[in-house]
Amino acid sequence: MNTLRNSVQLIGRLGQDPEIISFEDGNKMAKFSLATDDSYKDKEGNKVERAQWHNIIVRGGLVKVVEEYVVKGKEIAIEGKLTNRSYDTQEGEKRYVTEILVNELLMLGK
Image (cartoon, rainbow, N blue to C red; front, side):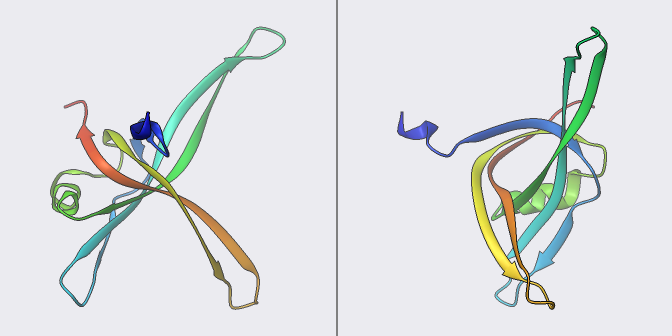
């Protein structure tokens, strides 16, 4: 059951091309948003569709895969864990961000 702790699995489509960030030590990180679709029926029985957006972070060897093959609109499956961070804006407001740190990535479709 320990493998279930803080584990997230999603299938969705990229909202934009990944942003690749290079660090001084030679490491890279990829950031992008992933949309997952959800639907339900309202009180009148009409189907309502909506998208949930998730902030995705990729580090390590998977960055090369993202850099070469993953683009806006591509459907992928990811497995990772939730991470939270905060930062202060220039106006002094504290902002909170929830991100998914990817452990595994699978490209779907053509």
